[in-house]
Every structure is written in C-alpha cells, then in structure tokens.
Image 1 (cartoon, rainbow, N blue to C red):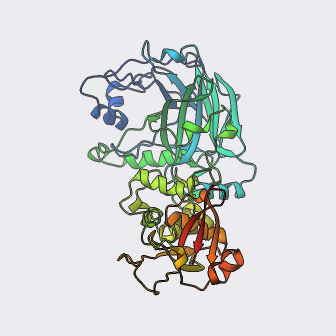
Image 2: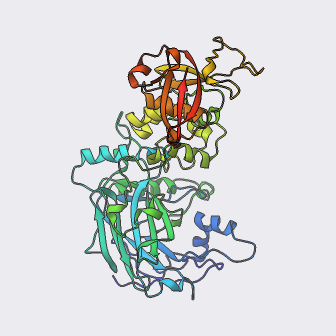
Length: 503
C-alpha cells in the first residue's frame, strides 16, 4: 500500500490540491490525474473558504487534514455539502495528514497528538434525542458497536482505546511526522433510525468527525487543535456501491446544462473544518475514554441550586425579584437561558440547549421536551417553563411591628389594614409554606424581611398575659390558613442572635 502524497500550497491556504498517487485504501485505484487544479477549486469547501479570506491576506491554515478513501456522490448540488456512501462493516481508510507550514505549532513537533473519531447524527433533531436513539439501537444490537477501528489494517496509530459506554467513538495517539492511517468500520445503517412505515424509508445521514488535541502542561490531551467532519450515509453491505452506481446513471441521463449544477464525484472525501464536538474540551481531562461520555444517559450534574426560596411564585414585595428570577423570560439571552437551566437542576441538558434563547425554549411543546429529555425530565422541564409550582400548603400574612410600637402594649391592628399609631399603615407580606414545619416559617421570614437566617435562634408566639410559646411543628400544622401576625424581634439572652415573636 505504498503511496506518495504531494501537497502544494494553494492560494496561501495550504489545502491539499494534488493527489499524485495510487490510493488503495478500499481496493480502488486512482489515476495520477484524479485531481486537477480546476476540479479541486470547484469543490464547495474551497469556494466557501475562498469567499471568506481575510483582507489582510493572512489566511487560516489548518494544522491537519483528514482524507477518507471513499468516493463522494455525484448527485450533490454545487453549493451543498458533499455526501459519501459507506457499506456497513467495511473498513475505510482515513489518512491523518500533517498540514502545518514551516514553523507552525512548534510545540507539537516531535510529540504525539490525540484524535477522537466519532460517528454522530447529522440531523439536529436526532442530536437532541441521541441518548434515546442509541439506547434503542443498543437494545436491538446487544454487544455491537456503532464504530470500530480496524487495528490490523491501521498504520501509525498508538494506544487505541474504545469504551463500552461510548459505542460511537474511538481514540488513539499518533505522530504527525509519520505516515498515519486509521481504518474505521461503521456498523449502524442509516435506515435503523427512521420510522418504519411502508418499507423503502429514506435513511438518515450521519457525520464522521475527527477532533485532535495536544497535551497540556499536565500531560493531558485536552488542548483542542483541529476538528473536521464529513456527511455520510451507511447502507447494508454492497448497498453503497449500488447507490453510487444509481446516482452516476441518473447524472449521465441529465443534460450538460443540468450537470453544471452538480458537483463531480471525487474518489476520496476531504473532511472539512468544523467546530469541535461539544463535549470534547472537557471530556478527556484524564486522557482516559472512561471520562468522555459522548452519548450517555442524563445524569444529574452538580450545580449551585438556590433554595426554593421565594415565599411564593406570586409573592409581592421584597421577594418579588427572587420569584421572577425563577421564571424563564422570552427575552432571555442564550447565556441567561443556560444559567436558568443550571439553577433549575437541568445541567445535564445545557449542551443540548446550548444555542437556545428563552424564546426558543418556551416554544417547545410538552411532547417535544419529553422526546428530547425523556418522560421524567421532560415533564419537569415543561412544568418549570410554564411556572407550574406546587400549591402552598399554608398561607399566612405577616407584618413587622414598627419600632415606635412597644411589644408590651399588645397593639393589634384590624385585619385587612390598620395604622401603627404613628401615621404609617401596617403592610403585610404573604408567606407561602410548602412544608408545615417551624423551620420553614423562620426561613421564609428571614427571606422576606432580610433577616440573616443564621441569627434566628427561636420563633415564639405571644400567648395570654404576654407569655412566649415556642412555635413547634405541631403549632404550625394548627395555624389557620390566611392567619395574620405581627412580629417583633428581641435579642437573645446571651446576646448572640435574635428571637422572633409572633403575636
């Protein structure tokens, strides 16, 4: 399988444009004239990059290039992304090429880099439900993987790893200075993820994505260098050859004018630059595949969760800012939406909704959320978005007694309003209790009236003849709904903290 790959710099972008070789990765031989300069520049990926060249002439130069030895479809329009057909289980070569200019990235010279190859969904809708889709596939195909490395055929790869919990990803180390080829096998077919109705369903497209990293100061492969991907469809054995032949025959029947609207078929597929797969920057912190869940079941992440704090979703007054902050507003930005998800214990889904604003998230129906997040979390997220809070078990109205009023005078205003005796009307605040316990009363009083909770020692109720009765859980359970209380504070006997007295 000896081959020589010659690369020249084209329009200062350094993209490979001349393949003067015999590429035999999949048993197909290419003539020396497989690529001409005009053909390469006609590729949509070159047109897109050419149109975005900076005015200062400093073109972005990718450090690596990945070439998959499989032919592109001729039935793809000029400005669309290339599409490559693969046979299920067949080994396809991906050539890992060092594309650096002289002096670029000297820090990786003579060192190994890590690449992670994945097969992922192209369709965004399926990306949102990837866990459910792949769990269903695993159930129907126990013991199988979506993606494998054909190690005996591969060249130059070191320390290959696969993880049983990540059926769609493989990783390995390689030296950019040496010839490197990774042979992959895709075992899932495109029609396995389409609803079966009448037969002959159109299969969904996948993506082959390669993410490459260098070592950080701690020797961990977490510093992202380059990512590229291509669109594929996978058929049952020999199905890709038949599909390629069908597309070619259809194109031959078209007129010359119609053919101009389509890309020519190329014998190899160049992976185009893309963003890194979302979980790659933090996934392989310990250089171990066990820490990189590409597709995992949603687990509850640790995050800073506020108390169920506001006295109520409908609370008016001092706690209104806390209550309104729990509701996601349509005007929320992407960053504010991410913060809302974290605060409401949906950290597992921040990546799925990484590009959603508040309006985008609020437009999703209950059925959408159940499909994306599963039944339990989908319903919980829907209820949180629609502010479906639990109805409080008890409501009481509380007013802090004015300093000018002596607690021993027993001054009690009339229910529904009154005057403090100094011309200032009593203003009551609604306290909504989800739990009928004394500690909940103290916590909500501290929240509404800005009293440090840790300073409250005891809560008492003023009884007959001015005695102080300790407020217990049983007493709270016997409060009448919508009872009204005045309260005042007194310093604790030891001077450390305060007591709250309801009357």
